[in-house]
Image (cartoon, rainbow, N blue to C red):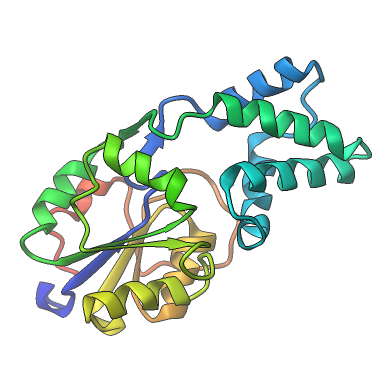
Length: 225
């Protein structure tokens, strides 16, 4: 398949194009210490429950309180302790304290004149916009869909279709690049896009991407064959 078969490329944001300078695990450890309790769940446990609470809450702060209190309850602890940990976490997380991942700027610059570019990211605008501003990506995309706020969260097909509609683009001529099998690849496949997976962590999900890459810069000059 020639490069002309794809004219639109959508990207995920977190751990695809940008990442926090301080890991979630590090901030979570500080939050437990601030509350004065031994850690009773990991960052991975939070990530596993994140999308469950995304449609139910209006802010990332509220999401963490709901998520952490539910995890505490499931662990046989007082849900109030989970809320306290969430508040301590919220006080320490700076959404502008991020950096571009290797290859991100090069790929976006290379694609700018060749493809229509959009961003489809799970997360509230108040969380995601500071990341775009800090990394200079706020003028890069023709459209940005905050899935879970503007639409259902990924892996629903709706956020991908919303982005394509705004770009007047067709799914069969579009690709989506993301780090998550569960949300990016599964969602893109469901929406009829070509899925490109650049893994950031191990996942045990029975979903197959159209293309797997070890790094973003492998996309530069890609023929979509």
